[in-house]
Amino acid sequence: MKLFYLLFMVCALTGCSKEPDEATAETTWEAQPDLPVVNGHANFAIPGDGYYVNVMGNAIPRMPVFPSLSVRADVARGYVADLSGKPLKGAHIGVSSSLTGGFYSSGSALTNDNGYYEFRIPAGAAYFFGTAATIIYNETPAVVALYPVGGTSSFPSGNGVVKNFVLLSYGPANPDEVAQQPGNESNYYGGALSFSFNINYTGDPYQNPEYLPENGVIEIELIPIGTGLYGETRSFKITRQIGSSTGFSIHNIPVGKYTINAKMSDGRKLKMRAIGTKANVYEHLGLKPDNAVGTSTVTFTPNHQYTPVMVPSFKSNWDALEIGLKIAI
Image 1 (cartoon, one colour):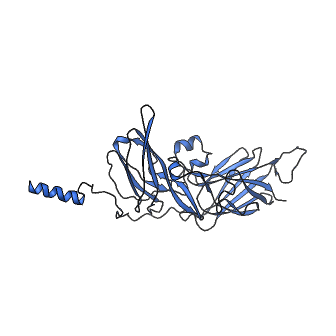
Image 2 (cartoon, one colour; image 1 turned 180 degrees about the horizontal axis):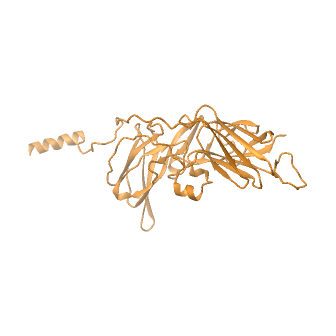
């Protein structure tokens, strides 16, 4: 009896009830594999009836190696890291659960210094929400969505779940939504640009010298300035046959800073002007300088109305920066 009492007191003082794999700030991360190499140059051609191009395709980069965790009933736990395997502190991970009758409840936590989070899951059919982190991107705090490793974001709450998350610079988000809306920039973790223009149609008696010719070809070139979030240095050239459509988009561009060149295939330079709701919202993001002829620099724009709590699960938070094109005269 005395021995039992002694063991009880020792456990009360030292926490014997903790599992062997309890994650703490001292948990050691394994050595990480080399980052994916994204370099070289890629060319894409959009036909006159095409509206977008996904320059990185639908491949997901290899994942980091996470510390091992066991599943605990009624508990959500896991790690958040960048693609290199560096733990991310302060990332928000939340779960929402729904019960019969439309009642909802939620639980959430912020990651600690070691990238670890843990919280109790409310009863019901559960799914992750608000899975995001705030990073500094080109001198600007930006809320960016996180990728759920394994590609699932819902689960039965009673079983508990171990779910790790990664900050990506490109890649598709929810594959079902990508399949349904491949032209939606928020379905990719890379940045996006959207271009619009007016057309001088053949036979139209009114010809504006700043409008683009119906039979012309637009050339957009993106050249990295330095490297992307994870050392990406790939450049891109996109040509677009004008046809009858007055716009197109470039999606899933590795997040970074780029020189952007815009011209017609006959050599005439294009004037670029930021338009739409994201025009000049951020001091250091977007098209800089604006109203540039032929060449400028460009960074991508997150949704400035979002906090980490508001970012949908398994969906990007990058908005397409809209750029209007005109013939420079």
